[in-house]
Image 1 (cartoon, helix red, strand yellow):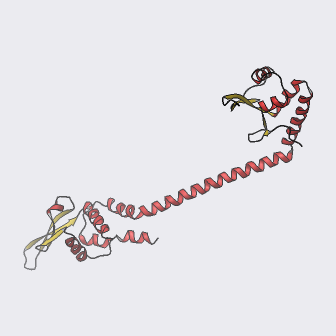
Image 2: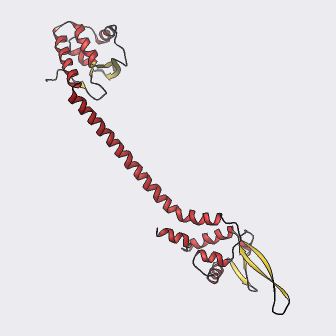
Image 3: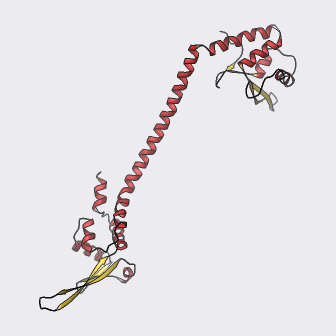
Length: 252
C-alpha cells in the first residue's frame, strides 16, 4: 500500500500529525481556526487527540496535534470532497492492517521481547549489585568476625588466651608488646608504660597460694580487658599479623 501520509506507530495506537493531514486535505481555512471547529463535532483531547508544540517556519512554536486514526478518518469524511474520500479509505486500510491477527501477534511478540530485554538488563544490574555487595561482605567479614568475638565477651583475658587468637605463645606476644614499646617487665610482672596504663587496657589481679614452706604467699598477674584485646588487634594488624579467625576467612 502506497503511503499517502506519514503515520506514527511509536505510541500505543497509530496517530497522524494534525497539520500534515490539514495540508494533505488542502483545507483553505487557517489551521488555527479549522481545528477548533472540527473539535466541535465531539472530539476530546486525551482521547481522540493530544496537543503538541512544534517549530514553525518563523522559529516560533506553533500549536499542532497528534490525531488517532479514528479521528483522522472522521475528519476526512467531514471535508466532503474527493481528497477526504481518498484519505478516509487510506485510514480504513491502516486500521484494518493494525487490527489484523498478524499485526496483533507481531506487536505482542515485540512487547514480550522488549519486556524480556528490560528484565535481562535489570537482572544484570542486580547480579552486578549482588556481586559488589558480596565482595564488600567478604572484605568486611574478617573485621566483623573478630570484633563480634571480642564484643560478645566481657571477661578479662590472660596474655596466653589472647596469644592463642593468633596461634602464638604468651612468651612471643609479651616480647612483641615489649618491642613495640607497650610494656616492660619488672619483678616477673609485665607492666604497661604510663602512656598506655591509663587507657583501661589491663587489670591486675592478686592471687594467694600456700607455699612449700607452709606460709601463704601472693602473686599479682596482669589481665587484659576487651578494650586491651582490641588494642592488641589493631597493633598486630598494623604489623601484618591477623588472628586465626581472619586467616581462615581469607581461604574460604
